[in-house]
Length: 560
Ligand SMILES: Nc1nc2c(ncn2[C@@H]2O[C@H](COP(=O)(O)OP(=O)(O)OP(=O)(O)O)[C@@H](O)[C@H]2O)c(=O)[nH]1
Ligand SMILES: [Mg+2]
Image (cartoon, rainbow, N blue to C red):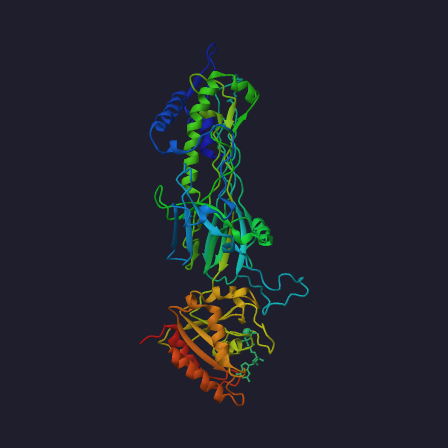
């Protein structure tokens, strides 16, 4: 544990301490900050404070801990463009979400308030989630699948500095030699190939804290970090505490409430939010001391301590400024659509506290105090897996989507004559000729009328086809009115989801008697819209080749 270099320094250092009144010469570590160095460092802090941004940070010495990232508020004038001049509303190009930003009345740290309706964080639950595990339908495969997780992450707390004095043969109390605390562990995320579900992601990750410093100027070890591995295609969004979201959902007035989230722009005072600002619930500026032998009360009566404390307040301010600059997370979240080349930092660990060796000054010969480490961060995130398929199969339950995917690829989704056979998405890969790139098709659970209002399996599964190039509407000719079925699907998906995507209509179960007329009506409807429509019977294999060709065109991946 003790670095060799330091051990070496302890035993054979070059600088010596000659004790008055004795001939004894004691070795002290070579890397110890000298009295002059410490004095110069404290002076430099004072100069820096004269001009520079760190002055902007509120430094009330009232012992209050810092702000929260967000607050839940009643919708008020502040969120209303008619009554608030400082209100702006804009649409993010990346996520297509509309944001309302309100200038904060008092704005000491340069952040603004992003007003987000509570519905934005509704964590959709499966329609079966109220059932006990015994009655819940079992998934199609042995391996469980999960595409949404709310995860609590916590970075490690910094270790405390040590109060210790050099002791040696003949030296009862030497110069201070307490080392600094180690920094807390960080939390990282990494997208890797080969995973296709979030079921292995835990609901809580806690990085280790840094170790305290030790005697002999040994700094504490840095806390072990955490690397969370997720499948490629995962997106990560910050979210408020799930307990608060759940209790809000029970509140009949929740639609009138908003989350006021503190955000910062690219530049100071920039109102277009780029990042969410996190705050550490750590000690206030000037606080966070560890005392040994003599307590705080004793030290507060000493002039030398009060003077030193003022200088160290400036150091705390600088540390707090660094934290404010770094503890941020993109408002739009992180989209891990490519495998990560290196881990991405989500939450940084707290900084370790200073050991007492830093407080040796001309006035203070035996500093019996050191600083505590800074706290880590604790935040919640929504991990959402958006499978990456070139095409998505969208249809009412029992339309024959899974049968179609089985017919065109080697994927084996479960088929059944009851509704909602498919409970989790499956991706099939279709290989054409050798000179053509393969394309992928995702089979997702069926969509019913009213899915928008969370009927059936809801619309949450559409996240898997959000990034696909085309949508395949699967309509059963065995149903009474296929045109009506198609209209329901269009209505449920909404124009926003359909825009900019290739579309193909596959009419299944064409082998059934009396479906010709149905197909004629469907074809007419599709040609009015300019969409291609093809009949087939995946069960008997009829016309499947044509369907594959049309799908390949629809995927937009065909070579000329
Ligand atoms: N006659 C006939 N029956 C079919 C055809 N395709 C599918 N079926 C039947 O329709 C029923 C439903 O098929 P699935 O493939 O499970 O339908 P799905 O759209 O995946 O259904 P969900 O997963 O519940 O949304 C099954 O009983 C199939 O055997 C077809 O071309 N002809
Ligand atoms: Mg199915």
